[in-house]
Length: 357
Ligand code: PEP
Ligand code: MN
Image 1 (cartoon, rainbow, N blue to C red):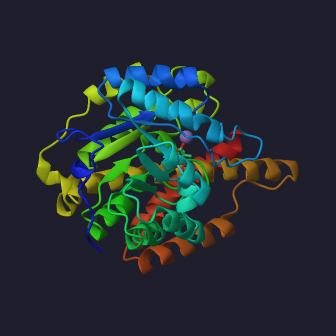
Image 2 (cartoon, rainbow, N blue to C red):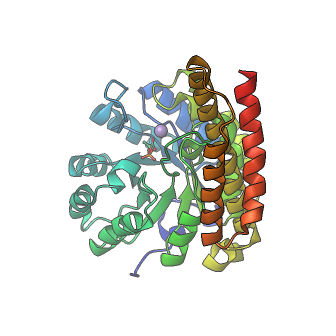
């Protein structure tokens, strides 16, 4: 692959604008909120306002966006305040309409990236245009699917392409709505070093308390930009209320971002100690999540044992658990004794819980 146009030549972001910020509501709800947001963002020096018109919702009864009706509001807000506009396109018709209304930048959402048929259809209508297109990662942690969507665009002659890391779906408890799995955007950077990578801390965190930390992490890892959901009244937003921040808070956040030297924008620098530590923090978080989940199951079993009058300590069962764990550990070159020690500590806590119940 090649022939990509560098982000500072897209004609969208200021040359010295790194990290490049795109901010705006998850969904465009009405003209008033959009104009209000555009005005504050412009004052805060944000170059691009995002707004979802067609909303891909997980469940059918959620707000699905104002659709086409919001396009004139977006172009009006863009012209009035001198701010660039961006929206999500999920099918060829969306692309045609967005281009007709002069939307400056498009993005392909996570659910669409996961569907190569749809990506191909979108690419076909983009042929011959020079609109910048950002590609969000698919919900599944499959770098090839993400790269594949970018390749399809490139083959249709699109030269202004960026990637957006918005985290990955996982089953089970996590502090994140979508797990960041930072090693995946690092892979993308290695595979496609000419492509700018944005981080979307709003969809990764799913909670406004996490947005600042995730943004700072992304910047320190060498991401080129951020896409942040901003709403004038986040608690009453019609979609993704928990993760949106006010434009005023956004301003404070962007001021807190310190960009390191240019050199960290390349692949090797992203694989530094810092990145490895990020990975360790994520693994540690997962270990805790898994232990917590294990204890929940232990308590459920405790309830059943009590109901059926079964004794708490079942030595045979525990011996089998340990044997299996030691074997699995040794297959991974971990000393059996070390794993046995960890499991005995976990078992002690589990027994105490069942006896306390
Ligand atoms: C969005 O940006 O509002 C959105 C729907 O994001 P994603 O495609 O990442 O879920
Ligand atoms: Mn959203």
